[in-house]
Length: 135
Image: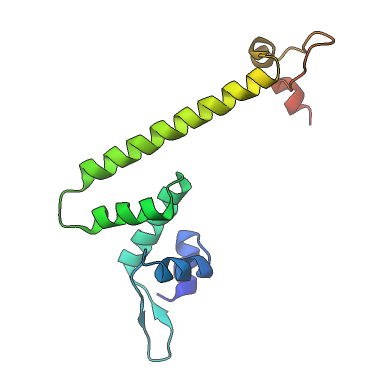
């Protein structure tokens, strides 16, 4: 498969695929006689994996580690699962912290926000779900 076909298949840009090659996340593609890159199904799988784990917030360094585990002959499921669980915990903590900061800065009006009521006059106002849906 040529690079454009692979790009469409995995939802990445051609430049992103070249970037992953330059940074050794994807093996250098073989070339046709005309000089076009040629990719196989394993490259598509690797690119799909990279896209998914980057979408989860993993840095390129961590993506490289995960790819190393993925391509090693060892049983890599446990280490990969452990890293993914650590990342998930980190994301959950970060999300919770942001939510807490939001409510603290808006006067902790969760009760009003979640019931969709309007806050009392003069209180710090936050958008309720009903307000947001009114457009």
